[in-house]
Length: 183
Image (cartoon, rainbow, N blue to C red):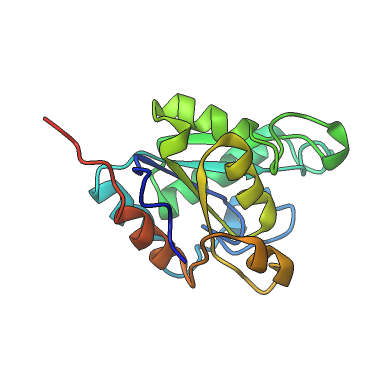
């Protein structure tokens, strides 16, 4: 499977948990952050290609009241230190029952990240591990690459247009379509 060849790529957005770092459910502890193998190299490859990079992440731990926004921000700063740097972080602090516009699979986080990066959303690729990541990309008009993990449901894999075996493979695929930068 491949990305649409008729669309250039000028920005990459990553999910956080199980895409950039090993998922620790509802983690708001910077000491528990462990990068996914290859994540730092993949993000660096995107940066080396001149792409702006961002993170779009649901963090319902805030809505649940088991962590503060400051704790989540500190955890994200640790991800940034170990895997980044990232140009933008977009965090949904809501729970599934809050009916917000930003919680993936809704498009809010992707639209906000693209705007903050100054990149047309149609030229963004969202890399994530579950159907909500793919759904948010589609709802926003971006492309998506699914990198399945053991918790990715088979129907999510079957429904994804583009699937990669690793974050490094996903970034390499996106880099094949990078918009040429003119001086």
